[in-house]
Length: 399
View 1: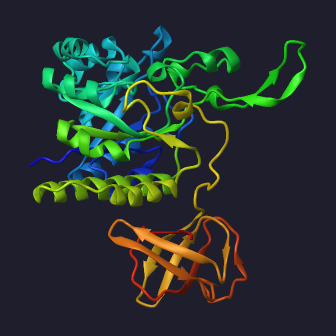
View 2 (view 1 turned 180 degrees about the vertical axis):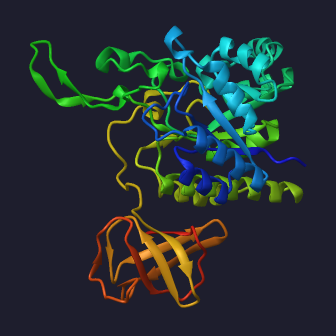
View 3 (view 1 turned 45 degrees about the vertical axis):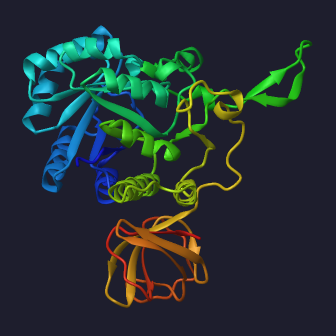
């Protein structure tokens, strides 16, 4: 049985490595050109080459986003760029422009062509049209419900990719102009300022400022309760949004969905289904990386205001990411510090191959053996005793 693909985002090479290590089957990233996340670190040509090499060594896939809505001035060096992606064995490209796809068919035919969610496809007839244009996969609009996905899969042969986690756009599948109007930054060319997430003052009819404010941003998508359905439908790829997200976010979210997917397949072999109690455990783990409220988005169909809008951060914000393991010698862990902690801090270690383990930190030293009162310098290398084994790239967070 071929398992469904778990597809993760990466804003730089470090995040790409973590995504693969924590369980992603494939990673997508933007280059310096033609990508919709202009403020992400993004990959230069050498980074793309390295990323593709890493993917090949691990037997995994690497996709490059080229999903801007291009203007004439955006298309310079397009053919050269596509030839380069093919030459370094990138798996495929994610595009929203038929022109870019057609050029790719001609100059880089080995690249898979995936239709971006920016094209707002949520019906089988449109999918058949794009299949005829040489696309091997369609990323469905995030406004597509489970029942619609099931019908589409029954009527089409092309691969289907579905968003399961991450930020949602107030506008239909990201076709937004709010950022353009308010900041002169083109959201459809990589410059979104996330204006929908700002807090707007509200004035009464006499133009007097009220104590209220308006926030039109949507809750983040979390489809944990629908993964079993998507696997049963035989969707080809489950996609996590978040090229702008932190290393810690990528690790937690990818790891959680990896474990959930594997558990569902394990139970399917036994003709069993995952329980609500188990799903709650996975959902609680995800919340350790979230700083916004979540909902199931459009999975059930049209959403209500309560499900879609949020007006404040979570009461329990993201658990502090404290450090990443560099080494463990059987007694001492060597850690690269990422946030403030001290002796006596209760922490939780987690990693791709370990269950969460709680520990109270004792005496901390630097690499020369000097005792530290606190770890307060970002990326500082510190050591302390640890009674259980950890591996390189495991992580530590505040409990």
